[in-house]
Amino acid sequence: MLYKKFYKSKSGFTLIELIVSIGVLAILAVFAIAAVNPIDQFKKARDSQRKSDLAQLQRVLEQYYQDWGHYPPNDSSYHIEDEKTSPATVVSWGGALGWSPYMDLVPNDPLSSRTYRYYSTNSGQTYYLFTSLERGPLDPSTCKATDVQCKANPSSTSCNCTNASTITISTYCGTTALEPCNYGVSSSNTTP
Image 1 (cartoon, one colour):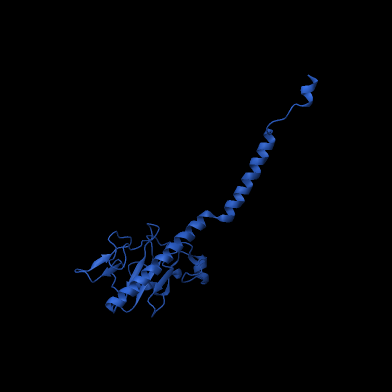
Image 2 (cartoon, helix red, strand yellow):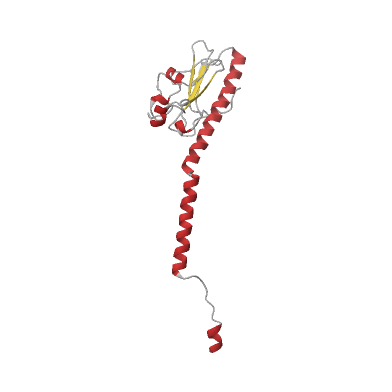
């Protein structure tokens, strides 16, 4: 019996040791999540997709201009109108039919509550493409990233790009007033 007493092994952790370990891990996990900020990362990813979509549309519009000598008109909903078809067809954002031969699939905003806006002047020599970046003035490429008023109230119309006022149906690129057209690209002869 004496022999077993000296060589008795302790196995496992005590309850207090487990609670302390779990507590330390929980605190580390909270700090890690706060540092990464996954919600902001998703916003950045969607904003990056929007910028990429508009850059792709910009290339397509320049090709259209090379073929036709002017940019395509916009319809009353500020979609692109393909006038080479008779009657002219509206090229819908995210439309499954695409815009042959220029694009197989016309991009759509990653969020269903937002949309891209296209505006072309009557002469077809200038166009504007707008979207609403979720990070608003926090993204340095938005139209009013340095505007103090816009930073104070990112959902105000003061965040709209200068030429977004040409969109008369809505000064917003979404279904609510919280989504101003704060990022744009345009033909090389003008600025968004």
